[in-house]
Length: 190
Figure 1 (cartoon, helix red, strand yellow):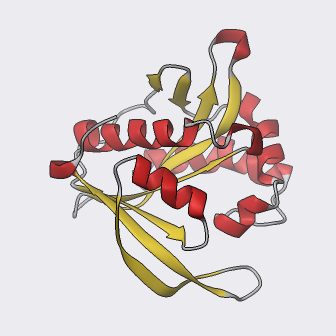
Figure 2 (figure 1 turned 120 degrees about the vertical axis):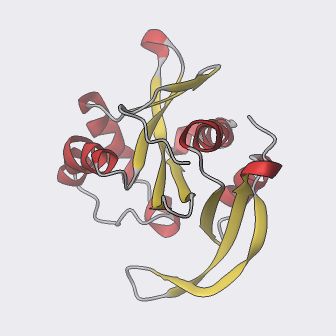
């Protein structure tokens, strides 16, 4: 049975906190999305604007949560005054009837390679299985995104196959995508 939270959860482990996006995150979301690698490996467009970041925080995130179609969280690294915006992680493309969701994430350049993404992925996956009640959580990743593929493997996801010509980029290029999944019964936890 699926249980949808009544408010956006805050999840923490060590120096990493996942929380609802807030007004103070808007400039950092905009700045992080300017990294040229982000539109290559995510659905964030290359012309991402401050208005996009404002819409994401003020409308998209709260509305998709209220409609039970997405759970968008900010990744924060550090505690207290040392806490810094590190990126975002979400459940999207959910099928609540089938108890399935897709996880997605992106990190700002200075936060990559520190285990932050793996910890955030594990935290949200654990929440998805234990609290929401998902049976399966998928991740669809560009086959050329080696760092993201390693992140998923280090987070307990298994490669299930390659989906040829699965995703279309802004320039019209069709990309092969790797399908990873974590299954509730096999999940080892964070």
